[in-house]
View 1 (cartoon, rainbow, N blue to C red):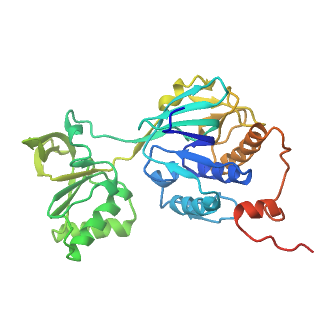
View 2: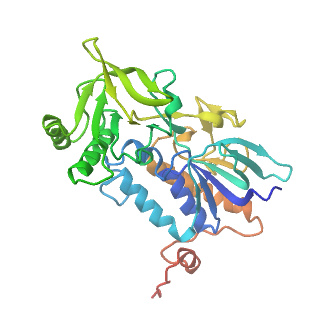
View 3: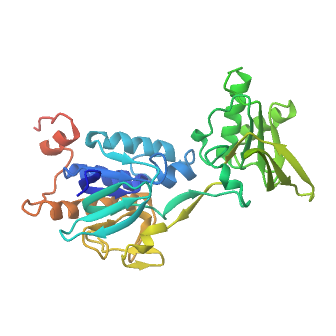
Length: 356
């Protein structure tokens, strides 16, 4: 096997809440996990689509946001030190003669694993692109789909495309940099949305409108229908308004925040039994049609399936127990409680309390 191939007992595909809890349950079984996700950070749909929206049905937590839930789960798995591999998708899964699975990602990384846990939610999330032919050639140079990639804004004319709270927050943040007189602030900030309506906290929308009134930023309603370039450099876009009139907006940097679109992607071609683009599993082990490959969370289906985070947590627990029986056939996988088990306390790095 190539020296560049990672050999491991477990790979988890998906770093959303269920994928992270899968890591925790595997850790309790002394199974180290590698985690692969197409996004640049953990959290999945929960962190991308509603990072600041309240969630009320997580057991023992009366309310938390998607971002807060992700942070709680990341702290919970710290004792098990999982290895994360972000910004890549698993393109292929091939079963080997010895029963292990060889995975190859979109970045060419290879993993040889004894067990595979698919916690990919409704699929890999891809940013919704601007439907203008040819504009994608500026991606990662002047056009960005992730906020943390849009750097080097000093003296640049920035266009933020989108009308939800994430786009609004980014516009207000960058305007605040300019108000503070920071050297890396943009020369101008324009927010573009197809309608003259911004979805977000009313106080933030009011602040945005106030900034527009004093010329600190600009809001334009319309859609991009073309672009202008000079010597291979993007210098502007053509915007069609509701009045059917076209205007040009000077652009040095574009941040496109039109949301994310889930794509099942290569999973559909891994040869696993499916029903309505979801993986069929049993409800004892949450195994797919291929022994050693498990599916947990929104990616799976079975009689009575409910697409809830807490149901995914239950599925991840049973899948971890099944994996332990497979990986350690000579050992009896005993039911233990984190409250009283010295073994689990050792794995978690906490001191065992004396029991009366």
